[in-house]
Image (cartoon, helix red, strand yellow):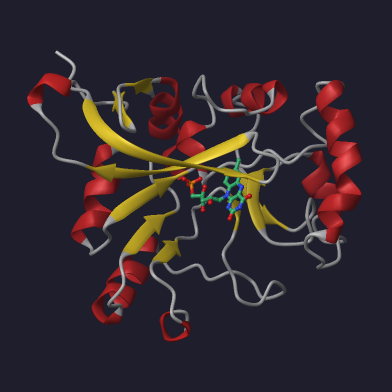
Amino acid sequence: MAVARGIDALIVQGPAAGGHRATFDPAAPPCDAPLLQLLTAICVDADVPVVASGGLATADDIARVLAAGAVAAQLGTAFLLADEAGTHPTHRAALRDAAFAETVVTRAFTGRYARALRNRFVDRYGMQAPFGFPQIGLVTAPLQSAAGEADDPHAMALWRRDLQKSDVIYRGAQHLHTENLDAGYFRIRPAGLGTAMTYRVMCSTYGNGELPSAALEFQSVPQSRELS
Ligand SMILES: Cc1cc2nc3c(=O)[nH]c(=O)nc-3n(C[C@H](O)[C@H](O)[C@H](O)COP(=O)(O)O)c2cc1C
């Protein structure tokens, strides 16, 4: 449908994604087909570049989606603890707190399904919140803002990817050196890998510009750019 309307590229988001789920019908439960299955099905027919997204954190994750036909991978959660991220300190602390041991897909914060760490706000309003994006988000924004000032992680949206591979993601986020080289190239040492890799990072910002997300694309780069 999107290709028929003339789009230049597709972003395919899997069910593990942190933050809002990509859906055509905001009131319908989001698709839970695994990312690789979606990619395989979509890449067969799509004659536009496909970017994979949702639950990706390591080089292996990225290699798998590239093998499935994607031209690039988009990561969100993996960057939330990076120095450069505008993640609220309360959100950062919750991401490191083992007491937040579950993520849920909830419409509690914005009136549209999104994946976040389960907290008391989700438990209380998850089933009550009407569908109504972005209006519900505007309604909860002052409360979330006040929660941030009070350092209360239970009244704000703690967006995060599925916790299935939490240790990998968590360490990955801690170890993301986004040291700026030049022309958009960054050196990154992902978790569990002995060697650093050089990526080209295309950064985009959302909304108020405080929450960066980035698409990583493997590039062939001169050896001199690699970390020793
Ligand atoms: C903190 C955070 C904020 C996000 N904000 C937006 C947003 O404003 N608009 C949007 O289209 N997607 C947003 N997303 C979703 C990302 O575009 C992307 O689909 C998702 O982060 C990929 O999954 P990952 O978090 O597992 O890497 C957000 C994700 C996170 C983690």
